Amino acid sequence: MLDSLDSKLLITMRDNPRIGLTELARLLGVARGTVQARLEKLTARGVIGDFGPTVMTEEIGYPILAFASLQIAQGKLAEAVEALDGIPEILEVYGTSGQADLLCRVVARNTPHLQEIIARILASPAVQRSDTTIALSTQIPYRITPLLAAAVSV
Image 1 (tube, rainbow, N blue to C red):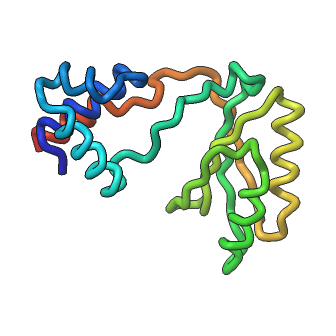
Image 2 (tube, rainbow, N blue to C red; image 1 turned 30 degrees about the vertical axis):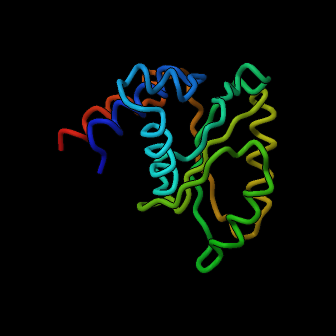
Image 3 (cartoon, rainbow, N blue to C red; image 1 turned 90 degrees about the horizontal axis):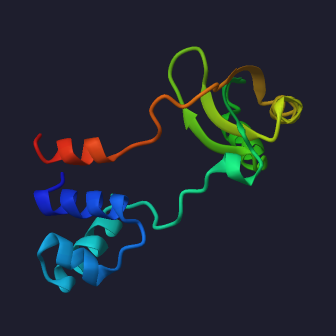
């Protein structure tokens, strides 16, 4: 659970990613030590996952975004995940329910490159089938601020 100060702290940090602790404390109207303690608590609890920059993959030469749904051979999940971990263009992998066992977020330089990545995925004997969908546009980009604001009113 988040309290009002935690929520405001996280929203302010999202809106101002390069903000320092002193300025953050000033904007929130609390002591610098309070901000630092809250950040340490939120980090220790796993609420804050990282402080790194958001890298726009299309700006570093990977404009194709695709989602690959994978069906995995029975009992071969760990083997499949190990194989996927070795493919740098796979940004995230989620275990899912339904027909697919894993959902992969994949980036590529172009469609032939995406085809090569899918071939590398399918080269693993643990992967039985792949179904790939290419994203044409982003309608709602990743966002967390509305959830942070709503979390304190729960």
